[in-house]
Length: 309
Image (cartoon, rainbow, N blue to C red):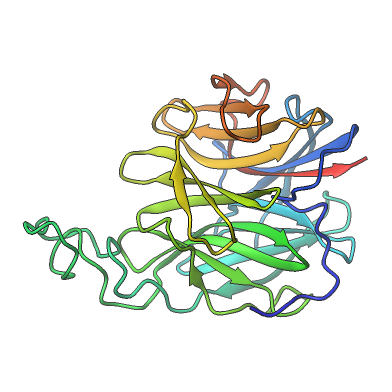
């Protein structure tokens, strides 16, 4: 991967620095009312969010689902999001979090060919229990053409800006990594899969704690959030016991609280609720889920940025 010069690390999702005593949390979200509009909220504690601007951004076309936000070294805020317009991810930028300017969408290149579990989901299950043919429901895709690119997530690490996203050729999603090739965020590397997470995983977000990378991802078959760790961003990842976060949850987002604890937000999409769970021991154990006050039942799969005030 190529290095990106002069990129801001401390303000990006997934940073490993200790949380400041006073913070500002910016949330960007679409809502149950509209997948075309992005709402912006702010909080000082990561729990009580107040509106900054409703319908702050509407892209020229498509949706603004699953937005993720970070602040670049140029001082601008950048959002990337699902467009649901084929294999394209959307971008926008803002100097104040209120007025947003659309950027060119990025057409995601080829992916996923021959990876187990990425077929179109048709046909019988392979009776031999191995993934050997796209003719079987659990077989690999033989097509390299990306049909969906969903849930892009910013991740800044070691001076490099990355996007983690879920890509599909018509069947199961696979988490992939893109790396910015320049500071304009308009040129990107070839996508590479995150080793160890496997297929049929979506909504993957990564947080670095010390020298360990923690991935939180939705298992699309079981409809649960899984937790995996790795010594490097690209992996290999190994799954560890998750928290008791329930089923039918998606859209994990992670931030650090002012007291240094870690918080995982979850979209309980079938119940129409938004939940959170906290860890005070370095993401080893997690508290029982609670409902996010105020916004539960309104917001959907959001992104959160923590900055020092």
